[in-house]
Image 1: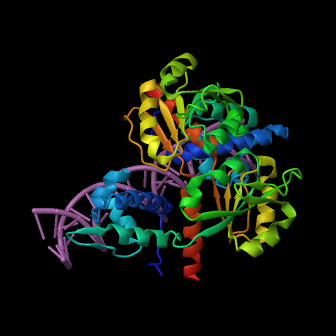
Image 2 (image 1 turned 180 degrees about the horizontal axis):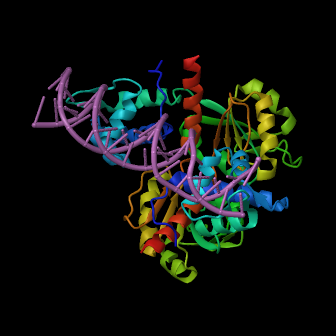
Image 3 (image 1 turned 135 degrees about the vertical axis):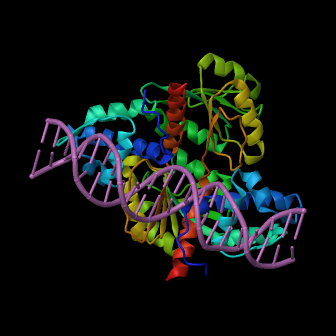
Amino acid sequence: MFKTLKIPEATIIRLSVYSRFLTQVDRRGVVTISSGEIAEGVGVSPAQVRKDLAYFGEFGTRGVGYNVKDLHRHIMKILGLNNSWPVIMVGAGNLGTALCMYGGFRERGFRVVGIFDSDPHKIGYKLNGIEIYPLNEMVEVVNQTGAAIGIIAVPADGAQEVANLLVEAGVKAILNFAPRVLSVPEEIELRNVDLSVNLEILTFNLGFRRSRD
Amino acid sequence: MFKTLKIPEATIIRLSVYSRFLTQVDRRGVVTISSGEIAEGVGVSPAQVRKDLAYFGEFGTRGVGYNVKDLHRHIMKILGLNNSWPVIMVGAGNLGTALCMYGGFRERGFRVVGIFDSDPHKIGYKLNGIEIYPLNEMVEVVNQTGAAIGIIAVPADGAQEVANLLVEAGVKAILNFAPRVLSVPEEIELRNVDLSVNLEILTFNLGFRRSRD
DNA sequence: GACTGTGAAGCCATTCACAGCT
DNA sequence: AGCTGTGAATGGCTTCACAGTC
């Protein structure tokens, strides 16, 4: 499907940003765009944009640029977003709830098809139209919905146990919001989003900068 | 204060992870720890751990290792977490609400001291004990509380405007959860957390992997 | 013997610069 | 003339390997 080279993860992150930028540009009715214009719009270098795209093929026309709709379609395909992804959420606390309500996922084709929680009081209720199940029904729901992705939004202490359950249930990828290092089988894709790490990078920079003045 | 070299951002992210790991280790009563044990605990190489720490000084004892409490204290100081940080939140929607309730921030010394929203119906109410203010009171609240960090949790369309308001109000750093590329003056620290980018990296990997089989 | 701290080597990502198209 | 696609050069992070210390 693609040139089989190792693709830098940074490239994937940028592709994701390009695709959103192209959505805006397309909405304005622009037909053709150059690597320089994309670069300016998203804050990277033009060469970077071309290199990123070149990993996956030749989408542009020399002397002209890229067709906006075409390029956008190609990038969505590369990111696997040409069809929608059912995902399951574990944790119906504040974070889990917010993530279920969050419109940004749906916009990009992610559909939460089930929420799991260990609290018996929450079972059976719905959140944004999505049913809350007990943890032991995970296998069943994954099988029925075909969900390949699980999101962990539980406190740090329960995260590893939840990860194990997700793997047993058959998901292929996990997005972990708990501030814990998780271990999962090698074939499972794991990504960690640590919300406070991001704040800590800011405080480091604030402190470090000041100390250099 | 520190050796003035350019510190890789990846190093800061790892320091943040080490510090959380050390909290756990310390709680178990462990006094001394080696770079290898830290490495194993957080999933990096021992050399990486030592290099990361070496940017900031010599914290260990050859032949012995690091004193857990000492090292933890040092890292917290490096990250600027030796005292607490007042932060303000813009956006009292689902995401803003969840972030305000989220315990992970408080645990690491971040204290939300004010929430801002453009919806007049929300003004004056409290969320987790924190007052919701109209946008035009931002300058005042920032001055009174000394908040140096603002968090943007509004829809993409309003994000740039909010960023401008935060800068005018005098914050020094911004954590942006809106999926938009923002432009701010160079002296303002800006970090973006795009929640769906993380899911998109997973879907890319799922697709790409499959195509290589 | 064990483990840190660090220069050197290796590796990977980004930038440069230009050939190749339109 | 303008812009893409890409090999070569650069720069930066990670790993290696070992001297230094306890």
